[in-house]
Image (cartoon, rainbow over all chains, first blue to last red):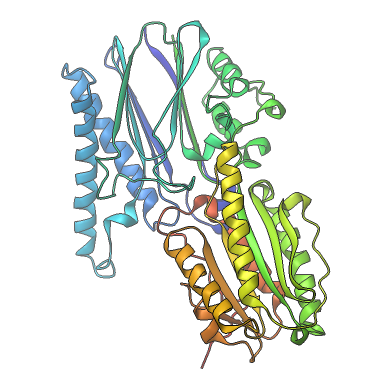
Length: 251
Length: 226
């Protein structure tokens, strides 16, 4: 039993207008066996090289985690946290290296700021580690949708903690649940939350996720469908930020 | 046509985020003539520019406090951009700027409390103070308002920006209301000012903690002081 995965990061209309890059990045790695690793990173608004920071962190953390799982490690808190710390150290090294280059002397770690959601699925466990905003929604037994996200650290919706922040470990959260009965899950960046989460109940919007998971299970679901969906006017009306959605369904 | 999931977007409540934005506008006697006319057409431009940005249309809410004509008036309490009808302002009388800023700070605090009660997410509110003069309210009143404005910014309660119109506006006084440097408008370039204002507030959703002062360049409308 494995997973079928669809993933897309689409640039926000605001970023298109300003000529900036998409700062949302994702990576997923399937196998070996039933294993699956997903990393989703949201680069910080006007941080100059946030797209690079997000790309590096998603790439590196997912690589390390896949390797650790392949080596027989269970997806526990310490294993996921190690991938966070290592990918952050990687950014520190990148920053130190860039500072040696003429023109980049004033480079700071904060210029690479991004959030990170790292998710691991083994044969029997789904584990989620997170720094910053963004949400994971899991379809539990009976079709119940459960939401996993970090508590707000600020009064304002767009202020969050980044992997590059000094206090990132204080904001690090870890959750795990059994895979049994788990039908599907989705990971999204903050840009999609205004659509996917009901503000009154704080619960996932069934009207969004039920048809989405259902469609992802059909043969019609191809690699392009998510990108088309994320580009729809109905979504751009709710957010002009970059938006990432990763969906996994059981095969 | 690409096949995709059949999502009824109309039935999704979601969690649309609010971005409160207050314009504190000088309608004193010195604003009569071209200035008030340009300010009024600037407000029309603000509305049309914000309507062009789909998210701004749905998240930004505008309030207008005026000082001058009729004293201090809450001309417009917070209203979503799509429901905002730009008022036609008249100019005369004195310049009770301090009292107007007190009102602006109060409605911002009240608005945030309402959003919190309703469980709505919101961005840090913006206050834009635009004047061609200096306060005529008693010194202790405007100084107290200036202190309150700085305190609110220091505790991250709101962002405050000041714009001076013409040579008679007192930049030193304005500087006491804001942690950001006040800018002086070129002539009566209210149109460009409000275009800038529109694009500034539209960036908010993508701004992040500690970098909210990274606004677009002001060179389209601000005068370089020599």
